[in-house]
Length: 637
Image (cartoon, rainbow, N blue to C red; front, side, top):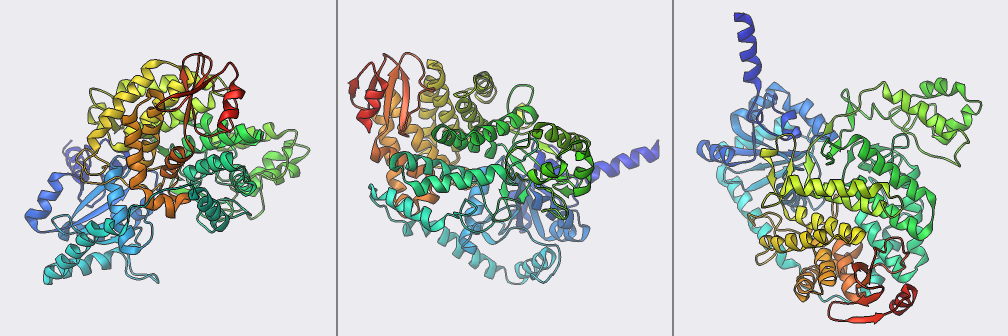
């Protein structure tokens, strides 16, 4: 009994300050020998009191390289001793605190003149002034240079012997960070944006494999969405070609799970063949919207099939008992990247022996002797479907069923669930079964995440919900607008208006990501569309649906302040550029007695509102009434 007590004391003493966290990512690190703290005053007070540097590590639970750095460094007793002796170590879940992540990603970008990533490593003075940044670091010195151990010891030595040097570096960077905005001048916006987008597509797109040139390749959903708008306005054949190549190559490539459905986060190569195998909720919400929009214009059945398979996989595997969606699944299982998803040549060959066209099926799924991923095969699609394609697919699913599925982060995030709700409403235009799922998820999201105020996320402990950020408001307003347009239920529009007015608490002299107003919102669409870009579109849509100049002025103010990015990099700031195009080319609202989602519009900026059949309006007046929708649309053309 005494031995058991000592054993239990030893087990519990290993846990650090993350043990009471609700975040799956933080809980993954609770037994590290590093004395981690969550982001908060306790850690910052300790750093000041003990005059220790702050070591900040930002990641998320399904991040492959985060797991690698944990195994190599944060489970390493030697490195943990250095961190515990000289630093106060803080762990942040970037999904739980995207505002904190956004700020320090900007720090990294300014220090290195390139985009960062995860894990993100930041070292700061005791008063939270950053002076060093990196992403993944190996544990020890290598051909790439000093490892984490050497860097930590060197910086700790400098802090002991010459703290003024580090303070001066940190102060200089803080000044640089504050003054960076003065370099961005406000610019007027005009119709030349379309020409600039066409030029950037011509220069930046890969017309062999799709997406932007080079590797790695990210789906860039909001860019593709903007390109569909541009095609609808211009009917430019080069835009159509870029979209067709990109969406087809992705649909048939390794970035899409050809066996069970769903998109992986990105491709490490230029051909969309070898992915990082995380499945993120936001990709699998935003990409189906793009695919279904393009299907509606092209009638290519591949695009609808891929969209539905992605949504169905999320509904099947990434949904809790309440109907809310989980945030992501890991790339690794049993400590090996991609283990669940890939196949050996021999196991597929032997399993396909039951088919008389085994070789045809092997070729169709891209199964090769030496594989395309560490000697194994991540299936890709080649040629037309064999007659027994479905039977072969079931065989491949059966092989996987004997394996351990990767870890799923069960955290529910308001913004990401809202993205999925928008996708489900879009899918309901083609299959009514998605309408019920969309409605249930939205109603449950409002019930759980709105209690006198909106919340951002929680995992298992509802009482530990995090307060909402600007992105939660922006995406939930969008989902509510989508819900109203597809159902004409006034409660959804009324709640969208309520949230829109509440969102003004994030506004001071500019817009901020958080209610504390210490981290500014920006216009960049990184993993998904920027909250500020989405909000500008929300305000523009609400201006039409409510005939409100107040909303219109809010939208135009955000658009005007983003003029520099819209004019110079429209393809890479697509969500705010989309709002600008609405303002330049005009958005219209058409009234009808029933929702018009089954009508095929060939103009991108049209909203639907309950009313008489049919009237077309802008914010300040109605333009025409007709019993013929075609006649109204001809007027727009």
